[in-house]
Image (cartoon, rainbow, N blue to C red; front, side, top):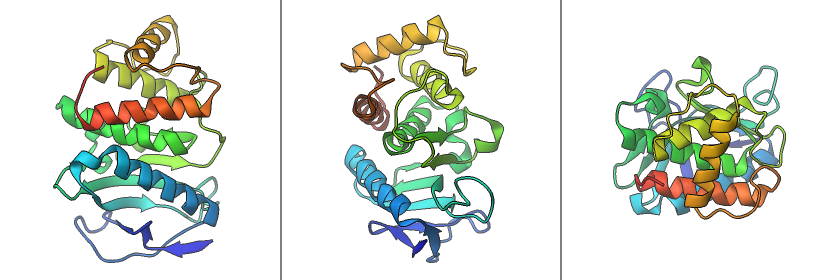
Length: 219
């Protein structure tokens, strides 16, 4: 394990007991997972550059003494992001369920950036336990879109609904309606190749989704 208080220079705070707290906090993760966090934060900076720099990240935890990916030091929970122009996205405040489309799209953009680098990403659509944070971990790499994954399917369904008004049930069942909407999304985003078998194609698609989400643009 290594100890860190920032990811590639961006501070990481903890707000679960003191909202708005910017006291430096030490976190723990494996070196390999931290290296992946660096790639993630650089993706986030690049894809959201219209907002300025990423001022800070708020997390609910990395290594936690329990079973699973957190216990292995290979997981992150994202609570809140703030940029230098004052823009925020806040899973902690259940942004995925906001009545404002722009806020939901920005949440999906953050979700998509995580899916570029982490195989298992659990968000507010996945279940009630993740309504106030986005979980990302190392399990099951490489990153692709798995039609048998409840997490991936619910993300795709929510994505299609929020960017294309697809009207899908966000139920985790990859049926013909979800497949049709996904094909439309791929076409509109000019995605070539197979996101289900190629991690580079899926990562590229997630970059395009993130760009649309941060710009509040339909596709």
